[in-house]
Length: 300
Image 1 (tube, rainbow, N blue to C red):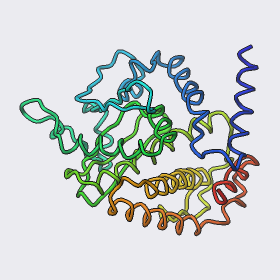
Image 2 (cartoon, rainbow, N blue to C red):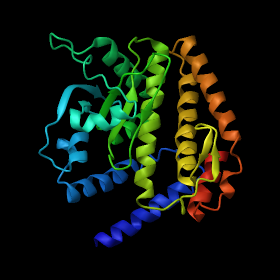
Image 3 (tube, rainbow, N blue to C red):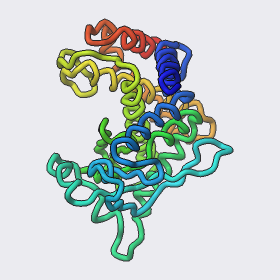
C-alpha cells in the first residue's frame, strides 16, 4: 500500500512540474514534499518537526542542545493558527567551519548583556515575513519549509548573503542588516523566499530527478561563472519564483511607492538575467522532465 501511495505522489509531482498553469512553488504539494523530508529525518536521526534543530541534524542526534534565543511567530494563512519559526544559534564547534569560510553570525550581538534580543534585527526579520504574507499561497509554502533560521552578520548593510544546504532540509541562513527599514526588510524577504525555494526544489529532486551529470558546463549570470546544470536549474527556479513575488508586491495597493518601485526594478533585473540563459532548456544534462520544467520556467 505504501508503494502505491508513493507512486501516486511521483505522478502528482511530475504533473505539477509539467503543468504550465501550476503555481511555481507547488502549494498543493508542499506539505507532502515536506513529509518526505521529515520521514527521512525520523528514520535516519529520530528527529521530527517538534524537536527539529540545525545542530541536531548536523550532529545526527535528537539529544543535542538546541540554542534558540528567539523565534518568529507567523501565520501560514488568514484563518490558521500561528506557527513558530526558530531563530537558532549554532554552537562553536558547528559554527567554526562556517566562520572559517567567511560567514559571521550574530552570536555575540543577537543577545545583549541584559538578556534581551536586539529589536532592530528581529524587527527586520518580522517585517520580512509580513512582506511575504502579501503572497498568500507562497507564504504558506515558505512557512511549511522553514523551521530554523540562522542570522548572518553582513560585512555591511548593503551586502546580502544567504544560503541553504541540501543535507539540512528545513534550515536557512540569511544576512540581516543591522538597521531596519522598508527596503532592508524587503531584501530579507527575498532571501527567505530564495532559500525556501532551494529547499523545496531539493525535496522535489528527491522524488523526481531533473538533472543527470555534474559537469560545470553552463554559464550562470548570477554567479558569473560556469556551473553544473543542477546549479543553474536551482538558480533559475528560485529567481523565477522571486519575480512572481516581486510582481505580487508591486500589485499591492496598500504598500508605499518606495517598495513598489524596488519590486518593479528587482523583477526587471532578474528577468534580464534569465534572458541570458534562454537556451538552457537544451542543456544535455537535463532529464526529460527537467527539460519540460525549464521550458515552463522560461514561458510562465
